[in-house]
Length: 131
Image (cartoon, rainbow, N blue to C red; front, side):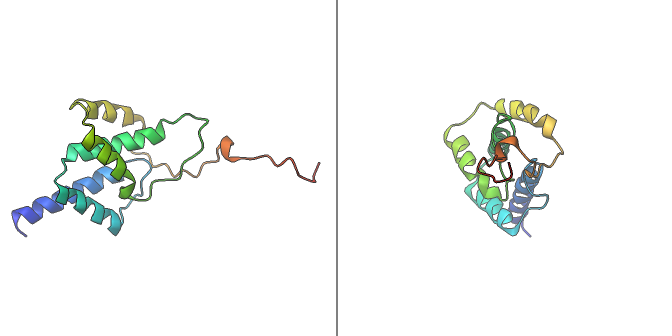
């Protein structure tokens, strides 16, 4: 393996590691996730941009109002592609990633499966015959 291939593989591993650390992502990335990570490497996107987009996208979900309906878990790295494009076209200050890392600390190391019952998802049937 030459240096370029080694660097490319290291980039892909880093992207997948950042993705796996997020609370609402699968414990193990899929082959499709690896493909998406490789595409990001081919585009030459900085790892700090990718991490910023992952944190921003994840925190937007995690910090929703408590009365909002429960979202299903993230199943693919592709979920973050629009956020990556957003950060690419609307750059954030270099210090913003530290702010996002700080906001993510309460969720660090916790996997959230999105299967919790949420009051908004429970619907009362008033047409019931059991009155």
